[in-house]
Structures are given as C-alpha cells and as structure tokens.
Length: 216
Ligand SMILES: [Zn+2]
Picture 1 (cartoon, rainbow, N blue to C red):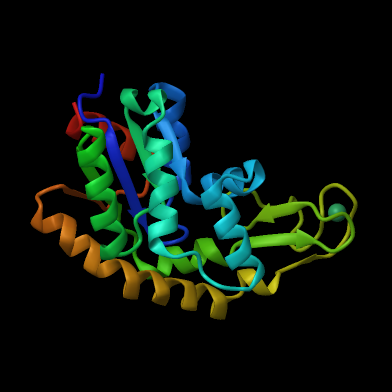
Picture 2 (tube, rainbow, N blue to C red):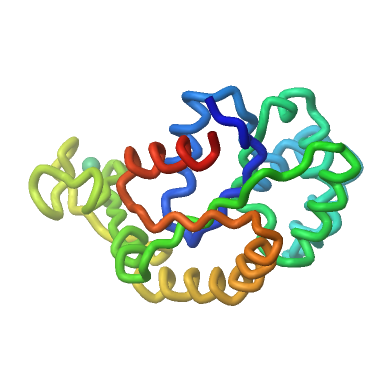
C-alpha cells in the first residue's frame, strides 16, 4: 500500500502523466484532479467561479491563477480527496504552487510528493507527433503505440491517414518550450522543499514499481 498519497504529477506534454495516473487510479482509491475537468464542471454548474471563468474564456482571456486555484481548493475540500489525490497539470507556475500550498494548509491535508516525469526531448517529440487521423472516417492512430496495419492507410475504411497541424513538429516544439519556461522554476521550488521525486524511467510497469517503492 502507498503511505504517501497526496501527489502532484509534473511533466511535459507526452511525458506519460495521463498513463501513470490511469494505472494509479485503477489500483488505489485516490481522487484525480485535472484543472481542465474542474473548469468544465464549474462552468457547466454555473458556480460563481464558473461564471467568472466562462466570461473570461468567451473573451479569449486566460483564467487567472486565483480563479483556478479557488476551483482546485473547492475540489480538494471534497471528502474523496482524504484518500489521497493526484493533481495532474496543476500547479504549472510558482504563483499557482503558492496558492495551492495555502489551500492545502487550510484544509490540513499536506502534499506528500511531487513526481516529475523527466523524458528526453527526442522521445517527447516522437510521441507528440505520432498521432495520425483518418481523412475519411476520423479514426485516430498512433505511429508508436497504435499503428495502422498498413502504413498511411486506415484499417477501418481504407482512407488516407494524415497528421493534424496540432500534432506537427513545430507545434510540439513550442509546447515543450512553454512547458520548460513555465515549469522549470516550479521544479526548483519543489526540489528546495525536498518534495521532488524525478522519474527518468519510461517503461510504465517499471515506473509503477518505482512509485510503489518510493511512496510506501
Ligand atoms: Zn478511416
């Protein structure tokens, strides 16, 4: 069993946070906290924060850290978070991390560990650009993890596979740049607090074994 269960997952897009979250949640009764999910839920339920966020997003503006942190705090106050939680994709900046620290202190449910999935850029770029879509039926493939039987051809309908602009090398590179710029200071921040666990392993079974050992 895990002793340390209040976790933050940090990693570049393509680093495998989602995969490992899925494996952890299948095995342990933890809450999965993704700001994307929370934001959508608050907007849908038309809560005061949700309404504020909706107005900003409609105007094409970023939702401020304080608003997002307020939503995360409300989510962390739910009873299921007492069994442990994985914060996935939040905080992204030091300012958000300060807001989170204040919220967790108030809730008296401190953070145990911050897991940084450190994957080399070459691997990240290969993963981020591996997605292919069928032009005809929209089926999604992945050159690395779920390739079509015949290269470039859809298994289902024989249509041509193509890469969406979102999955291009240029887009992937700029997503990584944003991640490093924003998140590097965050990694130092948690390192200084002695909370950081850096995982350089890329095999998911081995990552799980490592986490279970380190968090026991
Ligand atoms: Zn197809």
